[in-house]
Image (cartoon, rainbow, N blue to C red; front, side):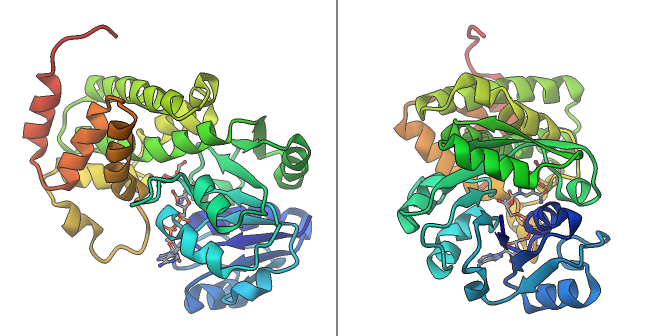
Length: 323
Ligand SMILES: NC(=O)c1ccc[n+]([C@@H]2O[C@H](COP(=O)([O-])OP(=O)(O)OC[C@H]3O[C@@H](n4cnc5c(N)ncnc54)[C@H](O)[C@@H]3O)[C@@H](O)[C@H]2O)c1
Ligand SMILES: O=P(O)(O)OC[C@H](O)CO
């Protein structure tokens, strides 16, 4: 299976390294000429994944046309850019493995729904789970959900990407795998706020559990299965991202909790904190589905400039209710 990767950020680069195992050729499209040059000349993505030595069998390109005639394309552009990049790529009926975590602003579509709109002939799969790119690139043990409605395609992709350190678990719940990854980014911002404001470990654990309840309510309303949300792509990723400053979303929340503004924290950054883009559209989607998501609403308020103390006070003052 000849693999192409769309997106030369940290995760696209780490996944190219996974796919290049054993010297298999991989084409990696990156938007930035300096990323293409650094990978081809120095075998390192010094912009987005500094310190990871990359396989000689990864060929980086700045030309999307070079992704033609591949057997599967891993789509690893940030969620808000997937539509534009896919529209310009030679997709046709090539299977797409969606690896971005988010919901498209304006349309409220999951990335898989965007892919189906742009490339209706392409079968889709979703790869998602607790996966810090730098750990995957370093060959540390990692497990992911690989969801696809077609079991034959899913098994071929799993066999192609699996290694002793990278273990895909099969699912047919594409929507569930996507919702976990999109929602956990927003909840990670909330957990970062708890850290930044010094609210303690009890509060963080409470947020993870109550955030997971929100993820589950929203997921079930959108047709996801509860066991998918409780798996690697949901709860697994939620726990990872809510626990570490390696997470860009968690780190953004830490800054907000310390009283800095979202605008200041997001200015000039080249890396993506997907939760900041997903939060407002998730709040809209939850309202449209009549799903209560108070933690997500609180994150929206914080991103909009509300003071952390006031937002926390409002959350805690909600009427008591059954768990
Ligand atoms: N980094 C991780 O550990 C990790 C792990 C799993 C999933 N993801 C997901 O992968 C996706 C990509 O994140 P990343 O961490 O690789 O990115 P990154 O933060 O390392 O890099 C930013 C990326 O955004 C791209 N970009 C910026 N503006 C763009 C535009 N106008 N059009 C197209 N692309 C543009 C850049 O080219 C670059 O590839 C996100 O949805 C993220 O949630 C990341
Ligand atoms: O750095 P984050 O917050 O985008 O998280 C990266 C991955 O999604 C973790 O699974």
